[in-house]
Length: 256
Image (cartoon, rainbow, N blue to C red; front, side):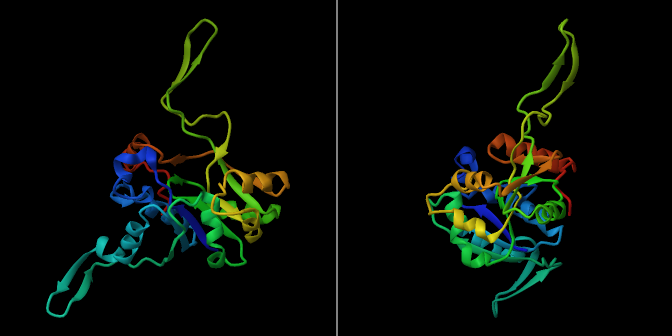
């Protein structure tokens, strides 16, 4: 089953990084967040990726063209131009890098990939979110309910500490930045049937608006509840949180 990753946005809230590189190439633990996302899928046996490029897509292309040189030591024979990678660790991934336009919206980017996706069930996620979600369980759930679309529902991380207070104003508990237990949001990690693409009109279509709203109105969308770790990387603060977890060897999404 193919994995589509939306990696073409401008990432304006991460301008400290994205003035130079696209958001999916912002590093956590010395590796692009895109690499982390792909490893989540690959750890569950899904290693065929289609990456929808847009803003600074050439940076992502260059990364994969030079993947082994970037991620291993090497020797260059300047006499004949030969390159020998030292302690090379082969990665069994097939990665298609497709330019879907600079200003194309999320739905439009997905629609442009129709010929590469084909007529099979596929997965879709964003190029800026990680989780310890069990991909196999999401797929099994999708197959069981038989609908057109499955979205992984997650609890967003709280921005501030949570206090539980009694009527007498005693603090009964204090949790530092817990995941909220109120409300679910779209966490990506979709499983979709190919006919979902027919709900997308044009490049200007936003995935989260018309297509997903139509699928829901048709009774063709179910949600898979993931109540464990999930974190997007919208801001520098988000990126620093992920970096801190990685550096402390406490990264829940590192399932490989």
